[in-house]
Length: 123
Image: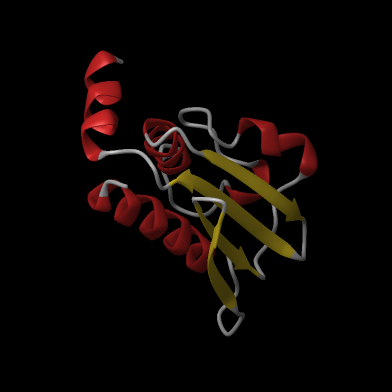
């Protein structure tokens, strides 16, 4: 796992959890390991993302309608998804408006950094 990319993935998801959650609410970070995969879950008690809009979250410049008044460029999750893809991983979102959002990132632990660099240079 590329440490710099992982730091950016987690930083963006945690910053989003803080940004889109009311003050005083809880944010949870769960780290686990299963079958040679690292699993990271970031869960918040924020505004949530409408179900119809969740499929667009990783598109460049996309902003959910209920988040238009909160500052952002719509690029953060696109970059996160690209970094997850470089690791040959997966990212999932579960969200309910008014309840909160959970992002799950699954990364294989058997990739060498050279493989990540090669994939990055071939794109």
